[in-house]
Amino acid sequence: MTIVYFDWLDYVVFGAMLLLSSLIGVYFAFFASKKQNTTSEYLMGGKTMGMFPISMSLIASYISGISLLGLPAEMYTYGTQLWTIVLSEWAVSLTIAIIYLPVFYNLQITSTYEYLRLRFNQKVRLLGSVIFIIKMLLYIPIVIYVPALAFSQVTGVNLHLITPIVCIVCIFYTTLGGIKAVVWTDTLQTVLMYFGVVFVLVYGTWRLGGIGNVIDLNKKGDRLEFFNMDLDPTIRHTFWSTVFGNYFSWLASCSVNQAMVQRCLALSSLKRARITIFIMAAGIFIIVSLCCYTGLVIYATFYNCDPLTIGAIRKSDQLLPYFVMTITGSIPALPGIFMSGVFSAALSSMSTGLNSMCGVIFEDLIRPAYNKPITEKNASFIMKIIVVAIGATCVALVFLVEHMGALIQAGKSLAGITAGSLLGLFSMGLFLPWINATGALAGGISSTLLVGWISLGTQAAIMRGEIIIFSKAVSVDGCEGNYTVPKEPSMSTETEFDRSGTFFPYRLSYLYYTFIGMIVCVLVGALVSYFTRLNDPTMIHRDLLTPVIHRWLPPQSVHCRRPRLTQHEIELHARELDELRAHSPYNKFNSSPEFSLRRNNNNY
Image 1 (cartoon, one colour):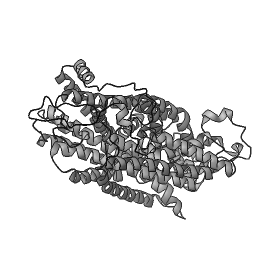
Image 2 (cartoon, helix red, strand yellow):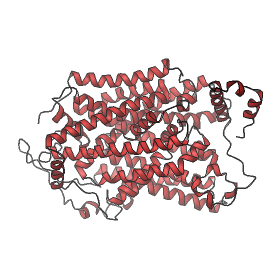
Image 3 (tube, one colour):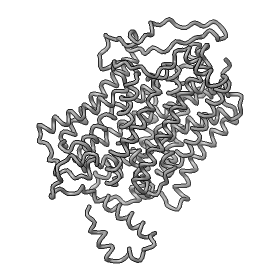
Image 4 (tube, helix red, strand yellow):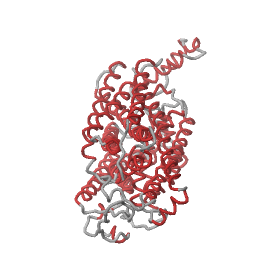
């Protein structure tokens, strides 16, 4: 097949997307009525954000280019078992809305990890913050690498030249515009992402003669597999690992993630935050299903001429851009629209990561280190420097990503290193009032080290060729020229996963990493707490525990104090009250000395 590259119109469309994203950052930095010069505006949007942009931002943040390119490649290469991850997403949304979100919203904390200080102590908060920063530094480079890989495929330009360009644009609008710029660029990018994916799969299905033909060709190619009920934890994808294992992975990504909580707290009420979570779940369900179906369309298109075998592409993650350029390269601007969608997904995830990391580093690491208050002007400047610094660090880490395996597995494997320990720390705090700070600290460290050892050891074994994951059968019978499929061992499940010579933990499915990390964190935390004196549950304030367990707890002691926020947070809340009072129709009453006295005596 002839390789088709971008033409001038595609570059115009793609450039327009980058320009619009940059202009949104410029607008919120210089022309919006409220400038991004306070921590409240920069990190929380002044708590005046609407449900629609927040929902779109969450969808864009969690559906990165890893999903857009990785999911179709997964369906093509290994079959559809991973598609069942969508079943666990609804359960996760319900769990967040009922168990986790009410606690965070009631406390009104800027950094999620402030909860760990209120529930345990400053050391546990610091541990949680460091784990989160490590998680994002492992995740963002993969997010950057994905669009660079796709862009390289459709333009022929070296991906290492593309990477800095992507990052500079993202760092630019994130640094200038704060969370409002991030949310509104996410909204723009979500629309582009949906449009690009829908148009490509609809056009591809039409070319193949309809959905029925797509399904038939995938049945013949043994791609359709949804209910592999094998309980063996070393099998890469089964129904249990994709539903049960992914439930904990997704729960960690959403419920205790700074990016999620920061956006939900940017809304004006808990009810609106809950509605937003369910809108996000619906949006993710749809886009994940569209991406998976696109993988079936790609297989049906190349069922008798595998582009990877004939050398048209280097990695399976390039299948989607190759497919787009092959079937739509002759349609003006469509490849440009598609690449805008892929880049949009990546930019939104990166900007969300930068903004949330900025909040955590500033609120949990820098501010506590100062002995005196930091002015809002200095705080705004420091946060912008943080965004630039971590953005540059992520660019440098991209060079390591290129040597990893499939994007979906690499992304989830690295995320699992920290996801389990974070979910364990917060779950201990919310559900187990007996756990003390020493136990939480020991559990978090033990979990991170154990899963980190398993995850990195597995990636190293894959790179050394000790672990080989066989793909489904492919054909080159319909290709022009003489090509043969390389001889491989039998691809039966027993042969594929019977690696008795490989250390057992390295053979575990990567979808169980978060679950393992959470269990280890909770067990170690409970054991250490038992030997270092358990907490008295009557002395743990109910605001720090999920409402689900309140009925089973002993009565709260009259001597139990309400969680005390830091002096900065007290000042921040006071400023927010001042702003609300200034815009209130009862401004005259609110400015009275009596009201001020009542406000100042508010029991924090």
